[in-house]
Amino acid sequence: MPVTIESLAPRMQIFILEHEGPCGGEACACVDTAAIVAAENPRTGELARRRVTRQVPGSLTLPARGRREDLPATILETPDLRRAIANRQVRVIEQPTAPPAPRPVRKQPRPDEETNR
Image (cartoon, rainbow, N blue to C red; front, side, top):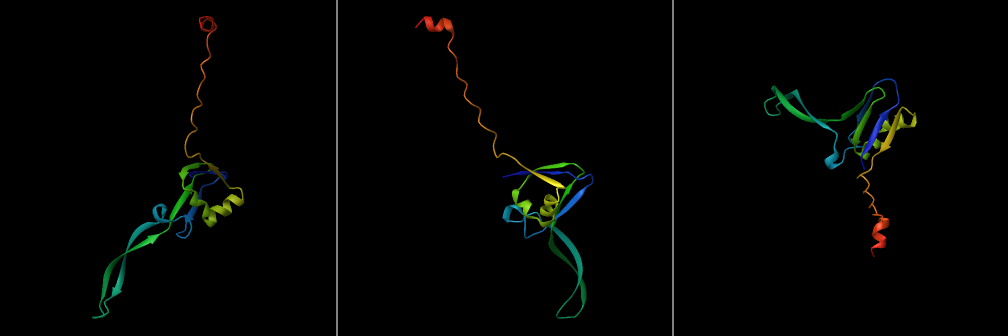
């Protein structure tokens, strides 16, 4: 179920989304980052540059008294966010999954229609 998170603090808040909490298959919040490292060739012993791709945790930024909507509910497992909720710096609002179905409207018979029957 998607959730909305609202900041109650008068300052911007940044939450690091750890890989263990909100990441799960399709809902992974990690970002692939490329880094250039100096690596030693085991056969020759020479140093050479090598490009390495690593997963880095993503982050969630809440502006002062701002909202973020349509977030996965698994984001609530982040320790920093749980701490902010406990300290009443952040409020969680659950969103309905689908709008409620409209109620059928009964048609009231007119008084002149009743006399014709």
